[in-house]
Image (tube, rainbow, N blue to C red; front, side, top):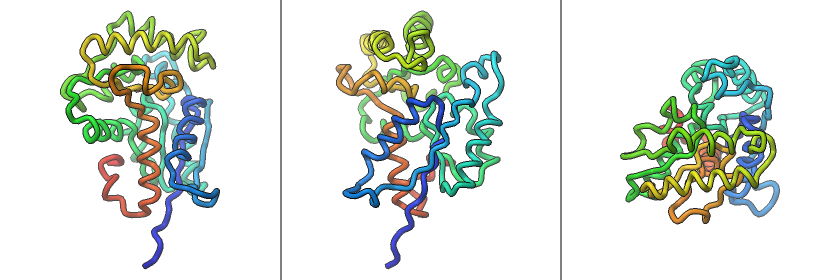
Amino acid sequence: MAAIERLTIGILGGLGPYATVDIFRKILDQTPARFDQDHLHILIDNYSQIPDRSAALKGCGPSPIPAMLEAANRLCCAGADFILIPCNTAHVFLPELRPHLKIPVLSIIDATAAYIAKHYPECSRIGLLATSATLSFGLYAGKFKELLVPDPIDQEQLVMEAIFGRLGIKAGHFDVPRELLLKAARRLVDAGAQAVILGCTEIPLVVRADDLPVPTVDPNRILAQTAVEYALNGHNLTKSKQLIS
């Protein structure tokens, strides 16, 4: 029997750079490997110059689509068989990107929803920490029976400040964002959340799995796991079909 071809992973990165490093490490951690040669072929385009997604969606900045297409096409030309985008907010633009690409893009949103349905089927009330754009455009809406999000004040003063603030994760700080995000997460738990999605790929950099009394769900780790399974599955795409449609 011929060996199954292992696919090459392309990471459309820089959205932001720390999240790109994070998913690369998580892919390595979840790859069954004893030697260097057992690891997967991974191409990374850390294109940090892609315009800010949240600003674009608020009408305060240029569209990131041209730059995202540029990066995706570079990955395709370099030999990637499929693409990961380790940024939840960027998935707002995925329907516009996919028709212009020759290779599939795995969805971090769909992968996360499928993971929760499989591993936490008893959880009907899911909390979500994410950028305001991810909330406004309903990326996770309709995926769960009930979705709990921070109130508008907590969203701006805790979540957005932790991500984009002067002492936020995007600026390379971690201690203050951790305090802010844990405060927001605990309020979701107090409101009845049975699990909490860390729905911005910077958030798992500072919030740990054991920080809350309920499960924390890390979409970047789930996307990494999905990518490894997809790559090792070769061209048999049946299992992952719902993640790329």
